[in-house]
Length: 365
Image (tube, rainbow, N blue to C red; front, side, top):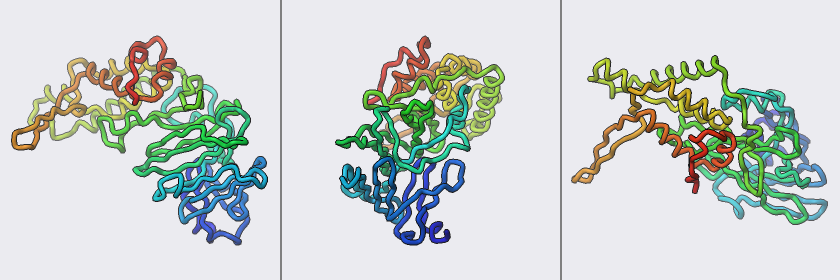
């Protein structure tokens, strides 16, 4: 096990980077960490996985793999090379789906995967899944594209293998799991539409998105995303949390020299606020989201950290001045950014009847 531990490459929750050749001949199995941080074993012989009539052969590097060959019987049906098919300077690996029961049948969504994935959920020992329910197994090849981004390419292992779809992730992993047990794997991903919006990358909210394949592309699985609205107790908890976060972030130099009354009218709006707003919108509770925003944000106060007025000077430099943002202006800015989401059409279905969402026009390029 010492040799295996030293050779074990980085492991994702739902994907695996196979180990290096250092383990060859020393064991018939390789330990892999599953979602519960327990060890499971994947059978291997010369870096080969045999499953469902397929033989999947990989050529590992010190980190990740650089080639994968898929055989049906003795016939090679798919070959993907890191150097030929992807950026040769980045890593490549295979995605393994999750198996098990959904954690909860009914939930109040709070942006956590815990409603879908439980500690008993395990990583499959086979890198095979069915995304579209056609009965043909699919293989997902993953490669990183730099700057914390990964690209997941799904290939149908039919008589004539073809690429089905590609989905990208930023600073997160995509997990594949048949949540509703209908024979089709969903993708648990993050919408990056608000990444870097009005805050640092590290603080950027990225709402969870449960996706399924429809007409050749991933769309929100609205029936799985729809939840009950939070009760009064939970709403009050949100309001209290927003107040706490904004207070912590508002003790900044811009308050120096201002009177007590002026300070009470200016504050820093924490990304926690629009992160929770997004979670409510993505669970079909946009009416509740905007009602809470009205309660939280008094009409006589302004946020100081959302807009900057930049003026170009004659000497080639520029001057910056904070712009104080009202609740109404923030709401407009928030909705405008939301309209860049690739899932806007499904968000309209989730929040049908709310004009805040239904009147938006897509700005997704």
